[in-house]
Length: 446
Image (cartoon, rainbow, N blue to C red; front, top):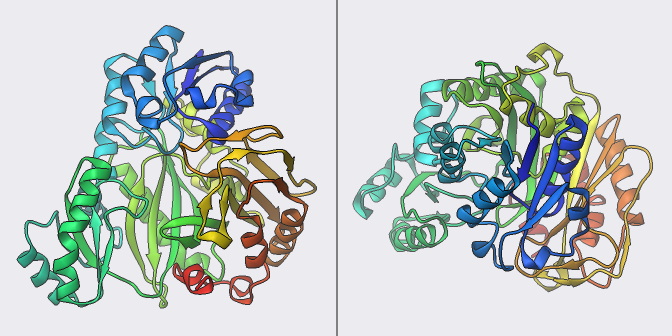
C-alpha cells in the first residue's frame, strides 16, 4: 500500500479521497488554488500545497504545477478525482515519467477508451452494442451526408474527445448536418484541443443507463451493475439512481458482461463507467467510456456495499480485486441528487458567493457528500455542484419518499440551489412511475 497520496482535485471529491486514504492508513496531500485557500477540507489533509491562482488552467489543469507539488511532498501516487485532469492521458503519462503511480488506467488504456472513435472500434471488437454511425472521424461534409442518408435522420454529431455536451449537435436533415459540422468541430477543438467529430444515429426517446466496472492489474474485472442517469439538462446529470427502474436483471446482465469484456480487452485497471442509451424496446447502444471515478459513484456504493474509491487505491497499489462477480449483490434502491449552486428559476444561473446557512439533512439511509459548511464561499471559477444527497431504502418507492423528506430538511441560504427543483421532481408522476427519458427535464421546464 502507498505511504502518501496527492489528491489532484478539489471540493467534495477531494474530501472523499481524503477519507478513503485515512481508512487505508495512507497520508493524504491536497493541492489547492488561491480561490480554495480557506476550504475547510484542507485542514483534514496531512499537507496542503498551493498550485496557483483561481482559474483552473493556472492551477488544477496545470500538469507541471501538480507534478511539482507531488515531488515536493514526496508522494507515491496521485488520485485525479473526476473532471480537470482525470481523463487526460498526458497527465497519466507525466505521472509515469516521474515514477508516480497514477490511480487510474494506464495512458494507453485511457487513450484507447477515452477517445470516442477508438473506443467505438474497441467496443465492436468486444461485442458491445454500438450505434450505427461513422466508423471513424469524418473527413468531410460529403462523407457525412452519405453516411447520414444511409442510417437515417435524425443523427447526432459528436466530438471524438471530451464530453459534457460540447461539440454535440442533433441534425434532422442534410442542411442541418452540413451547417453544424464545422461549428461542432470548432467547438470541440476549442474545448479539447481535438477537432475530430463523427456521427451516430440519434434516439429521440432514450434512457441513459451506465455500467460501473472496475478492474485490477492482474486481469481481473467485475461490474457493479447499472445506474440510470436519465434526468439531465444539457447533457449534465441531475439525478442518478440504482438499480434502473423497470429493467429486468436478465436484460441488463449481458450488457454488464459486455462492459467487462471491453475494459478487460483494453487491459484497463481502476474504475470505469461504460455509458449506454436504451431505446423504448430496451435495446442498448454504447455512448462512451468514462475512464475515471464518476460523480455518481455513491449510488452504486449504497446498493452494493463496495467502497469504489478505496478499491481504486488498492488496485493501483497492485492488489487483486477483493471481491468476485458472485459477491456483487444489489441491496435495495438508491437515489442521488446533485445539489448545484444555481437558480433554476433564472435559467440555472450560477450562484457563487458566501453560504451563511447550511443545514444538511440526516436520518436513516441518508448520506451527504459535500465540502461545504456554514461560512464557505462558493468560488466562481469551478463547477457549481456543492453537495450530493444520496438516499438508500428497501425499494424505489420508499427511496423517493425518503429523498423528498431529506430535501425538505435541507436549508441553504442566501444563495439559490437546485433543491426546489429536486423537491418538485420527487412529486412528478412521470418520475415517480419511472422510465423518464433524457429529454424529460427539458420538456418539464419549458
